[in-house]
Length: 239
Image 1 (cartoon, rainbow, N blue to C red):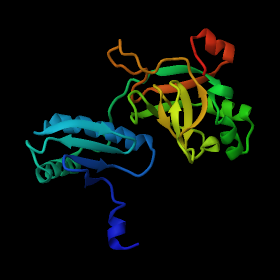
Image 2: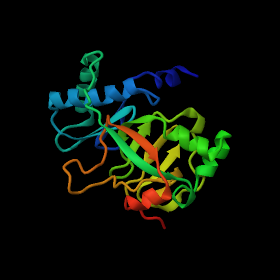
Image 3: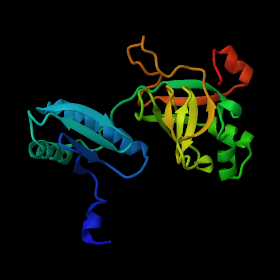
Image 4: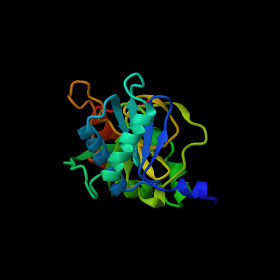
């Protein structure tokens, strides 16, 4: 590894993203402390009231800052963000008021066509996969990919499974999936490549509510295994 490669591993770092955004990277892995820092940084930049900044897109480990190039420039914003990073309050964290959201899930069968893949990859039975997946309170690290899609961290490494080699054209709403060390819920029908292990009858998007989404960043999600009959009783649909 040369000196240039070595510098690429230094965080935080600012990277141009197209002609109207700057990506601030705070780390390289899924980590609660890094994710807390991302959301704290959002608040710090908001307090600075930087001219031309139009939108923030936080992720597990980074923050995309969009700006209007007719109002400010990359160079100006880069320097302003650098100052904020150099003077940010060490250890400052965004204070979440997490809510534990319990989601009933029918695992396997038509609702979870890939659960056998996960079991085979882990060297476990389907029942063991269900027990492990439903025994953790998962943190909502970010909402992305599709409106209302929660990226959940905390998946037990025993059932971490690679994405499908060929993504599906259509995955039903409510599908619960695994991809590498993450789990998540598809809020709407969409294409996707996650290993689908079950489905919840709970709507993840509610256009009548102020927040729109069932869960918010910082919340906890707990999956509860239910029978197919209970799934139907809760209004779930298969097929």
